[in-house]
Amino acid sequence: MLSVNNIEVVYHDVILVLRGVSLGLQPGQVITLLGANGAGKTTTLKAISGLLKTEVGKVSHGDIHFEDRRIDRMGPEDIARLGIVQVLEGRRVLEQLTVEENLEVATYILKQRSASRKDLDRMYAYFPKLKSLRHQKSGYISGGEQQMMLISRALMAHPKIMLLDEPSLGLAPLLVQEIFRIIRQINVEEKTALLLVEQNAIAALGIASYGYVMENGRVVLDGTAASLRENEDVKEFYLGFGALSQRKSYRDVKHYKRRKRWLG
Image (cartoon, rainbow, N blue to C red; front, side, top):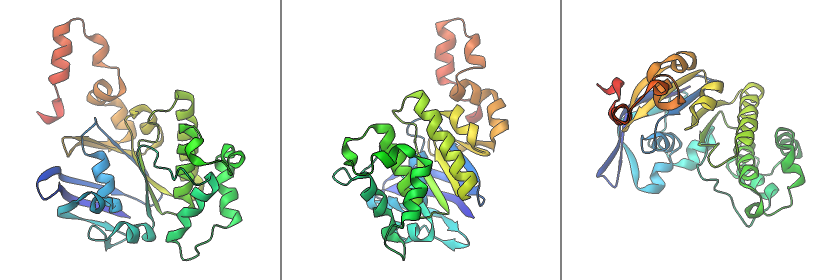
């Protein structure tokens, strides 16, 4: 369904950010990109959604295909119309619009440019809290409520693939659990494929079937979610247990920070 083939991404024709990234996504599948800040995860999403063009970035090598159509040379609005919608990191809401008006904005890319009551009710079924807030200005609702609204807004466009960038960022643990439960429910009920960028590796691997680990603009490890959960390097660097729990000295801690076995 989606094929990212050995892409390199540069900003301003100078700054090389991605170095030969490849990944694939099947219909209805959930995959996750794991990695530290600056690894290139968000840039990978923007390369797929076309938003690189808004930041003077481009795919300088390789290609991206969606349903056998090359999309890395297309604009973000055309890619969205094909069925790929990105939920940006940092909760980018239209603050002066109400919650319901924010949801209705998503229908602009559709041929039928008016939000149906059925679609709105479907969003409120996933996120009941939004129904009571539908006339509230979105700039005045909580961070968790904004995240629910943004996921709903993406769904209003009837995407085939939804790109989620750090949906748990800045949220309380219980709210993170609730949002990931609903994300999984959306995947099952809507058959929407999901590409999830997330630093909460435990939550991400809990709903994904496959994962990729990125370091310094490269994919350095990939595999099924089950195999990644059992991988000693992933346990140590991303899940917070494994060899980490056995360290006994400061020297070991310094060694841990330097060591990246998979890059050796």
